Length: 474
Image 1 (cartoon, rainbow, N blue to C red):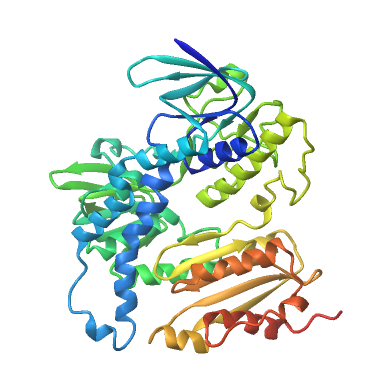
Image 2 (cartoon, rainbow, N blue to C red):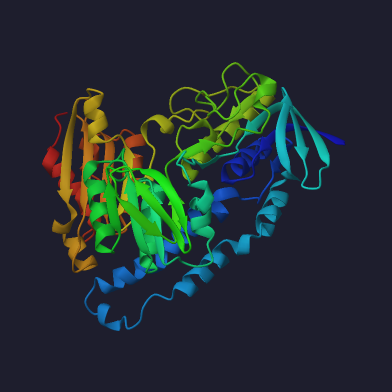
């Protein structure tokens, strides 16, 4: 057994762990990162990058077919094999050599193997060959192990070898038929992707699609999926699954049955904290890790939990945001420097509470940030809701011959600032960052009157929102 000492040990070399390590190194700390799979993690190989790649080709084809002139030029069908080949290039055939070279260039050491805490500031890494490396941290350990798919306790489900999101994004081909359990982002995006490949897709969801966002967004996505031939069965769950010669039959709680070649489980996430030695430092294995706004686990002065594992916002970009704050504050505390951990401070992940942006790459796209009108009402906030039909904008008429979309703003009427925004329509992801900036900056609507949207673009919706609200006094 070998032994090494570093200022910081990071468990998990995904996008979040890489960013924690990078910021700490830039802050002058010696840092090692531990990874049992591929450096770069889920986002690079099984989540963000492959899923958006699988979605893009069919979306481009649908976009071309929505505009007269381009429509006539489309003479063939989607080349599904080429889409999967492009996905393989994007994930570098699941080879992490490029990521390893980046770590080396950034001055971050990499130890391959399974890392587990063995006590305060101590991590033992077991290599695939069984060898052990003992690591000791002078200042901190950051757990960045992410989350995994929740597997519901449905009789017969495991026997049919169900897909998780990892299988759906790494499959070498499209099945003839697919039943998806769940109605969240993974379910919606994979339904969109595989419907684009010609797969017969059925979604089974207990309630509506995309709970947590504005109702009109989930309704629009359901309509879009159905227009692509997806069967959406709401108000039902899987009560049993039976294997067949050519796939599986899912028995539903409403008495229905759905047969498919493959079953994809997309019913939620669980933290990857089962086998990382949390019990050796008084924490419960298998649980989400609570943290303060500097991403430090309460009751310790050395343990941090960053990204999905803390359950604050299960999104890669938000995890990377947390990682920058965590890496910087670990370095600051190690140097004995001042810590800026107040709201919106350098070392505080304040946006997790008020300004989390998210995009669902469905057809139509859904982009949202801040709080929904429903949540604002539940919290008793003084708000006004502003809705714009995007199809009425001049910019949308040039974009598509059949543009459909909606944008909603939630405005705090006491402070006259935006606190929530939701966009539904083609490529609305590109509208989201402006709303995020307005919310984070608490830009008064009176000042936004001077932010002139270019004509003719869909960004003119901002002018429509302002005109509807009127100029606040003062």
